[in-house]
Length: 426
Image (cartoon, rainbow, N blue to C red; front, side):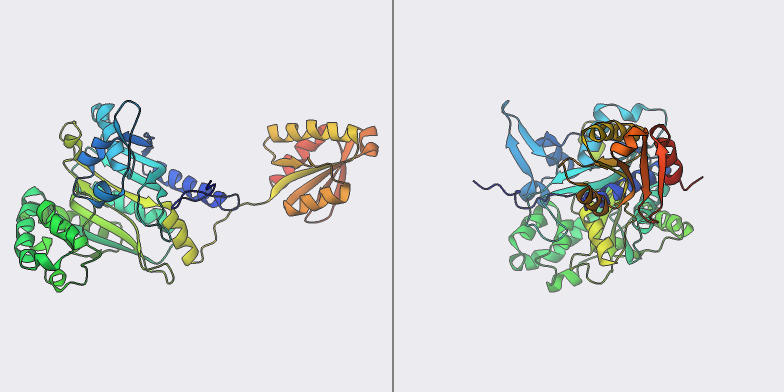
């Protein structure tokens, strides 16, 4: 029997989980400043949601989804991305009827895709993402990109590049699609089987092919920017103006396309230029979608969002040598000798914990020397020593492990003393 974690998954152990907690809390705090509220959706959904919301022609739907039939003979899929689930919840719970619009949401949670595991890309991975639904204002596009950039910058990343493109409105996209088909059709037999199919289903995604990226036809393919109508050009220009007003640098890449079918107008990615980050430089990506809510059964509603992989975020932090301010010490460790002292240690441990003081004690009946070694390994700031002599005086010895200073205190004064000392002696 194989008792190892499934391929493409990982155990996040103590020593590493604290980094995840720190990053997640910083992302939550940042979202609150931008007035985005948390939404939590099911880990699995009806398969049709992703077929309609993500797109039948995408690699995600065609190749990467974890899909199974449940006991009710329903086709169920572990969510491969967050946007479709958020939009489904937005429609089902009629959030479009709330007085305050746009509806601004964020999520953090596991996603699942069956793809070849590699550094920073797992089959179960964690995404943080935001969705702003209910506004056509280009300023919202800029706000979403600003939030994403701030998330990386506030965690300490500096080697960042925001790449921007416009996919245009429906009219512009249709004109561009026709031009792409005309351009690639003479080379159809030279393209991979996936691109041959994409040429019929969604020609824009040919530009995103990893297998054919070096084909000569790729470099001469018509740019979407050449086919933007006046409305799309105006929208794209407004987005750029807002970014410039916020002093956010960006570059325009006319070949940038997103892998999901529902995007139009703004598309963007944030990349890392850090040395040693790897061949795949994308940290996150997103864009605007103006038809997804209707596809899922809701009213005509515009939206924009992005998603970032926390695995790749942590990888980028490591590549840039960013040390997160993780507290790995213990406030207090109780050393007890003797049966009566052990009983008092149990009581005192619970009392200190109830008052917000991080406390631990020995559970292996170690001798005093062994208990002090445990306190050292746990990087305890203070050690409380309980023995027969201390109990006879209804007191305990408190040792500051940094200075070596020892203070004998009545048991009922220890909590207040430690609270004051841990607060900086104020």
